[in-house]
Length: 296
Ligand code: DO4
Ligand code: MG
Image (cartoon, rainbow, N blue to C red; front, side, top):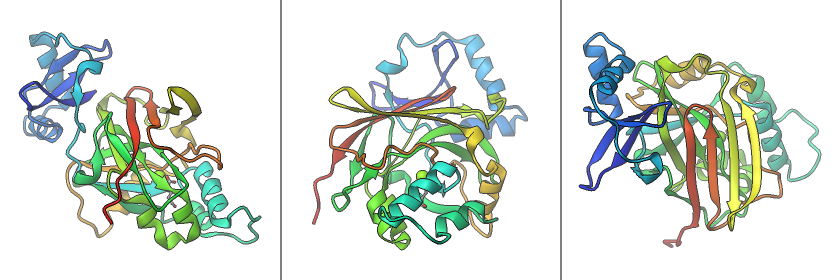
């Protein structure tokens, strides 16, 4: 797994975290340089990493002691929606404001349509590092984290790695009117990525990632939910191909693949809550929730 951290000289360092939890510093400055160097040499990133592991000593520090950075400079983060049945049910609930729905909704339709829902989620400036602060919107009273598997792709849409994403969302704003989606999804510090990138070449079955989300309030667990990517309605190829249609995508773009875990309808995030999103084989993305001081 590839990580990035800030050292005591305030420099960004690329490193690999092995299955034995050892950390080796890599010579490349960032993840995309590692991928490009491997391509230029006709090797895989894993091959270059194994050479480093054989010829160097691990850091005398643990992951917890490092000041982690976002593992890839993702110029853009996009997200797919309503890709799991649970998400469809949750959207229908928030859109119907508690009334029983009678007709087929936009969410029912998009769940079954050929074209998936794909929306623009974040830019690198809005994306928060692991252990960073995600913000609450001051004009929403119903906010949740969305734990999602993230595909790290290159400009031609090849999946080069897997990461974890938190697609922070305002259920009341989207529920009021789906046209408010950008406001329900995008604000300062509304997305987090990390803590690592699992190289795609090391993943046997990307449709078998276990996902767990835990939310703590005053160090007491107030929510836990689990799911598995086998429940995903669509293929990653399908999602990426729609993202690329007539679009320009940049190396290191992250595509979040949708949420399958939704806290109970009466739950909303609060100031100082701590969110943990764990994906087996990738790690735990941890963030603290903060009320932002309104600028207006
Ligand atoms: O339709 C709204 C967004 C859905 C979403 O973000 C998800 O399913 O993860
Ligand atoms: Mg989502």
